[in-house]
Length: 376
Image (cartoon, rainbow, N blue to C red):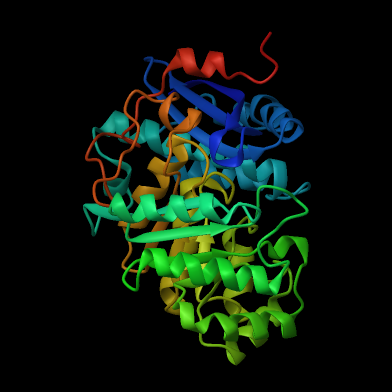
């Protein structure tokens, strides 16, 4: 039986964002016999992480302690039902996501099976890592050096977007955007895929502007353009897809299978972004993947946080022919490399799906303590 559930908000300086402070919240689930599973929520901000801990400790832990750790889906339904009044979005989604991921890790360890096997079996033994960075829209030379390094290291899919400063964003200056994409494509060559990530959540473009931009960018053969409009503008996304040929991606701001179903029903995306650290964990993602498969669409894993999220994303990507790729930090980052004993490292741009019990990573307790939010 499950003996205890604990939450650990962590904070760290993200090297890929010039040291910007970012947060995650971990969940640790332990059986009466001392077997432990770990999960992660991308809670992002200190106040959200602190609130997630409250919900894990006071809201959901009492529902989970004493339960059979093999009944993961049943526990997931119990947590979602418990949150009916405040909803399974926002902070509640973070808490449920972290616990659910930890339960799958725990179940895999108890049964001696990797999570992908528990989900039905992996279709691929290796996956393409998408080297994902933030644009520096004030330093083209730095940006080009990054993409040149990705080419030399064998990455097959690359991505960049947003900007290092709020007042200097990709998508804000048409001429500058064209220059960046032209030079990046020149450096990458024609065979390496490129995804352009536009800060649609900032509302930079209306639908007509997005149409003009995507038509201008057709020459760059983008794998997709990510979130070109506000995530709530599903009608606008559908119009954009009808008027352009470049695939459109969205979904990183969604929370549940139900909200992804609305995106699908609206005809709003070619590629849906899923994140097990926020959209109700591995169980929530698996349910969404079924919807994506039924609609004949593709999905990518928006896993730009810690190693637990990366591990969960790999298992979820490996189980479906509709899975495309996963965001991957190409340089060392604390919660990718310090948090676990065995960080992921691609070979020629590919990541091996581990055949180890559970998620397949080993959390370092000293790192959990070192990065604790509010420590000292």
